[in-house]
Image 1 (cartoon, rainbow, N blue to C red):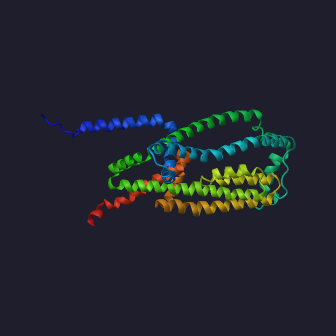
Image 2 (image 1 turned 90 degrees about the horizontal axis):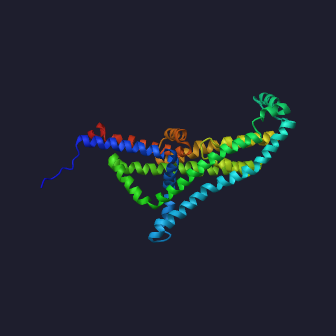
Image 3 (image 1 turned 30 degrees about the vertical axis):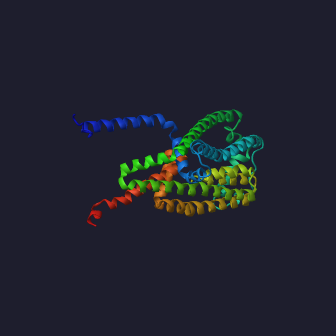
Length: 359
């Protein structure tokens, strides 16, 4: 009986590579619209796996490991993410009517200029001139707020509603994927580790470890620090007397997750205080907000993210900015993870180059 060889011919190898590449392209094409949801599920399962492992030890049994624990933890993650967004959306809906009433009053009576606005150094004269031309005169205010009306608001509501529906669908896909990631996490991790060792050799385990540490560091440095930053600035809202403090505080907590995102919220709050004639409170709030952002974004976050993954600060910054530019919010976590992979490969090149052989 003839013994068949298992070695592939060059033609077979080329055909296998071509078929695998074509299959990968088709897979990316099919999953492209929900790809951010899959990335979010991967980031969340890596970031929360230590807590999930402790939950697994709470009870024993195959049913708990295969269904109970994954479902319970997935629902907990869903509530943790959806609750603040739902509260903020509800509060914004309640306050939208008051905004329309304020715009209507501004159209008929104009918006009085705060007394101290013209006395601000450097920019006071220009701000006072702009305010007088666009807000003090009712006709100018009508022109400025022309795009803010019931018809325009209805059109905006429809477009925003479609976008919200799309985001809800992606969130559902994330939760479903997260459930299966939790259920099959150990087996999937073992397979990925073997695949990494097959591609990168002995560096595969180090790359996997650095990716995990980069995501953990990014979650600590972005999400947790962002929530604390938003809460601290929220206290400033309360002290300064910002209207609708809860809405501004929740919005700041969400925006603070993005580097330099919080200034959009507290500068808007400062402008609102300025419009109410509370110039000193507005300036103090903006100064306090920028001080808080400076400390967190330039000291706390780089230390947490960089030290956790052994990535230089410049690569952390490039990973954050490049990731959010290419992938949106999820890029904040994917970017540093890719930089971690790059750093592991870069550092390990010295172990395989001519200098290593000379040693």
